Image (cartoon, rainbow, N blue to C red; front, side):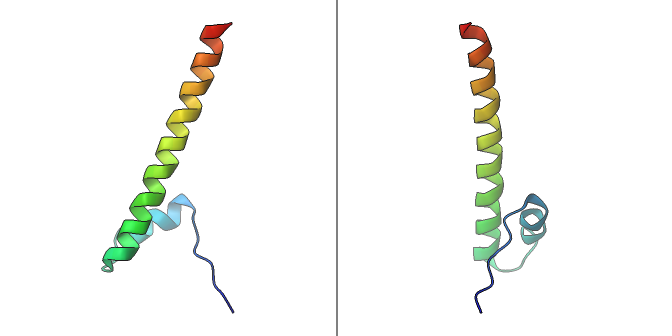
Amino acid sequence: MIVTEKTDMASAHRRLHSPNKKTQARALALIKAYKWNRAQQRYALENGKNQK
């Protein structure tokens, strides 16, 4: 049985407090990717409005 890792923000924030460095790094990478994607979507929406 393969258990997949949860990739939601609540789980990532909880894993930041883990004593395991690899787990912390994975959680930080998830949070950074989420924030980057959110900023890119906002940027794309604003540029779409300005081009019209």
